[in-house]
Image (tube, rainbow, N blue to C red; front, side, top):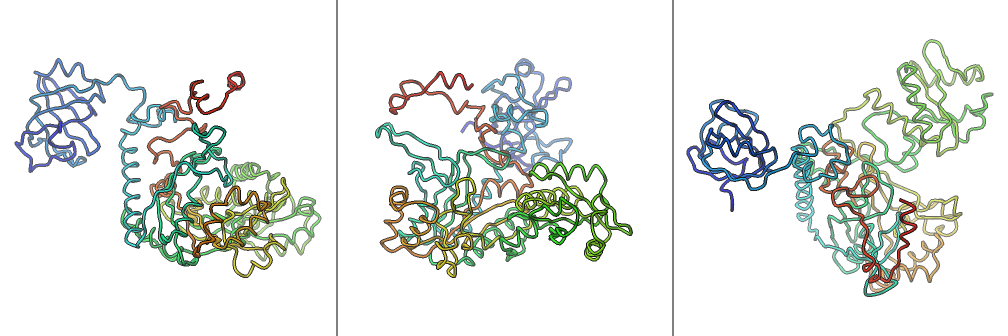
Length: 575
């Protein structure tokens, strides 16, 4: 080793010991004939003391240069209580420059002075910042805690393939053309879904994996083209078994890493109630503010109410300012609502729609709401729910209705098995096609698909979907029936999923599982909304990596080896 100790290791018990340290020059401070250098590695910082004999080499040094020093550990006159090594310093008698750094292209002291693109381009420098270093180490610790718990419960970690058959699950597949088999291609897995189910058929009744998943979809702060999920599958289980496992897993991780004891079991809310009271299926339960049904207003003379498919509102026990109401209206418009209607219900009832309401409507409003502002949207049901769900979250933050350091989990259950695709005029899976319908709905599966409820569930944390899973179909005849409902013919089913249907013929057990968004979990445990700060080498919003330049062009020879052609003219025109 080029060093005897790390930069975070030395203490008073090492006094007068000859040591060798290696690291990065974190800071240089010169005072007369003495120069102090803070030497940094991932373990910490040690102060070095250099006398005038090293003035020539000190002149060459720049911040972030890599050096090796030899010297003796001495007690510091002025103790730095902010550093674990703050009671000692190293008097240097030899220094070697291992790599001289050029002037830095980004600010390591204040990330706000750097653009996101600059941070991604020089990611190796960005990762040297203390905050980023701690994020990556924290991610590692969470991963180890998850493994510890699942191993203790008899689970086996098994890797599944990265080159798989293309079976699109909603998002686009990333395709990998085969050089050996011209005209054929692999896909990168959107999830290990089919393989973990086959592992259940193979008899591995408790499987898990920190699985890499890849989806070609539009990006945002909490979404990346490649991400990690805690993938779990179990045989001979029911929904409650999955709930208990995940709740105890999260209890263990939060207790060990944050010293927080979660309240378990988590609250369960049906999908219908989530939409009814919160407008979406990922409610933030840190604050108690529900959507109000106001369809009785359709009977009024107000045209907007009369023409609305659905009328709902949110009541806030406060008089909202014009600027606050404008902000809420802008939020509503993002979700295609034409605007909001407000009624102030204090000693006097005020609002632009009041003159169009009958006395009985006003009295009914006064009975239900008093001492606050009612925000109403009348429109198509989906627009109403989407817009009010966003307004609810905006109000919660705007009025500081919740503790941002609180963790509030809930399960959303009883999802519909199918959703109607209006554009394509067909049923499609609400979750995915391998989800088991509730037993009592199997009889009407192909007769009335819209009424069928599924054995699937989402785990929501503070208004964010953190995990999703289901009990799986394990009988081939039922699986083919579901495929038929969504418009997949027998031949198509065999072509796409024949290997799974074939496997079920030889004794597939009842099984179910869940996938927890690992990047999202780690970020939320650190009270962050940006998962990129917890991924070593993330992509930007265009799915590019500015550091290595991917995706990059490949040579004509590579295209030919794959049996493919590329129209460079079209590519150049697009760019």
